[in-house]
Image 1: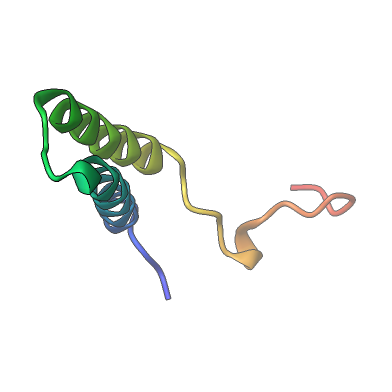
Image 2: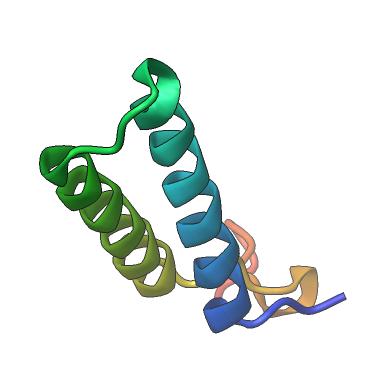
Amino acid sequence: MKISSAAKAFVAGLAAGASVAATAVQDGTFTGGEVVTTVLAVLGALGVTYAVPNRPAETERVVPGRGL
């Protein structure tokens, strides 16, 4: 199954945002600083995960000793 980079980034952003938001509301409030932290976590996860390429399929890899 092939997962696109955009779907991979979306899931990573969702996971990062949910974990930061869950930690932030432990005291019962969601302050402005916590909102900024949540947004930065989501954007960071989206950007980094989208920038990292998916691993190529086994047939597309270069095997040491076999050349290109």
